[in-house]
Amino acid sequence: MTRIIVIGAGVIGASVAYRLARAGAEVMVLEATRPGGGTSGISFAWTNAHRKPPKPYHDLNVAGMKAHAALREEFGATPWWHGGGSLEWEPDSGRAAQQDNVRQLQSWGYAAEWIDHRHLSKLEPDIDLAAVGEAPVAYFPDEGWLDPVPYVHAMLSTARRRHGATVILGARVADLIIRGDRVCGARLADGTPHEADMVVNCAGRWTNDVVREAGLHLPLAPMVGFLVFTPPVATSLNRVVRSSVINARPDGAGRLMLHWDPTDATLGFDHPLSPSMPEARDLVRRARQLLPGIGDVEPEAVRIALRPIPGDHLSAVGPVPRIAGYYLAVTHSGVTMSPFLGHCVADEIMSGQMRPELADFRPARFFN
Ligand SMILES: Cc1cc2nc3c(=O)[nH]c(=O)nc-3n(C[C@H](O)[C@H](O)[C@H](O)COP(=O)(O)OP(=O)(O)OC[C@H]3O[C@@H](n4cnc5c(N)ncnc54)[C@H](O)[C@@H]3O)c2cc1C
Image (cartoon, rainbow, N blue to C red; front, side, top):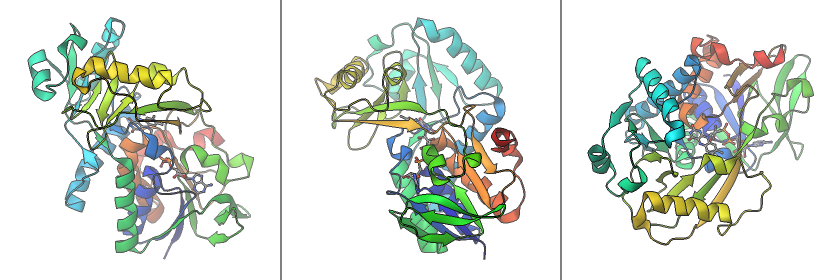
């Protein structure tokens, strides 16, 4: 049986581990902290293929959306995935680009339509139309969002219980075990060696922390992502809304998750965090413009993360040149793509057949 180590139990590692174990591999997941304890647990987690050129990258994201929907058949129920689509409107300055994007998405066969205020109010009755103004509203019915940590748990626990995978928490990988031109396993920070026929690095933004050999480092272009959470509030918001005032979605038990791109750009990763910080209050004030019914609420929590972005902003999935037994799976938009990437990685490793969908995303482009 092929022994495979998967480093990292975020959405990517959990998906890869599940598919490999289901395909018959002897899988061991080594996770430094806890399942979903990295970037996956601090993600807006909108499943979409929106403004994700070039076309092959868009296609990977669409395949991820379809793979999330298909899990319902396999698992019976997928309480971690929420469909219902997303809504979008832009300030004046963004409308031309939005029109172009919707046109492009439609020409690619992606579900994207313009809706009027009546339709908007039917979908989301609590949204204040004054916050929409004259802006055209686009609706993307196939989009949704994920609860990443319950998703990770579902993949890992199924891999473990049904397919015999081993998941070791608190297992911080310090280096790969390399003999000649082959990776033969991973060594933990406490010195414990784990041997394997193949190591799949799914450590996200920590990808380069698990291998000392600088020649095996993947160039990364990490960017800050900042999220604000409200306490439970009185709103029926049921979808991802990306608007001219705020991006918001439900986050369970009546809480809202808020994101605002311009704020990301003002914060360093080391910025001191507190729910009372002005940036957090500003996001909640913006949410109140969208949903006045939430009232005079204060932020309950704030979180910040570094997005795992390969140097050219596209995915890096595949073997690493000149060294056998080593495979990378690192990407932004990983929440959207993870179930599809799980399939692809398992196919490539278990059957040796290279998936054409990944042809443009090989790590080799960084190492040659
Ligand atoms: C604010 C924000 C918003 C986002 N919004 C979206 C979105 O709307 N849609 C979307 O699709 N994507 C979005 N993303 C990106 C998405 O969240 C990531 O692409 C995805 O979570 C990456 O998953 P991963 O499994 O690769 O990484 P991670 O979840 O970080 O998993 C890596 C794991 O490796 C572990 N690890 C680290 N070092 C070691 C070590 N030495 N040994 C063992 N284990 C180790 C970590 O503990 C972690 O659990 C967003 C990201 C952020 C930050």
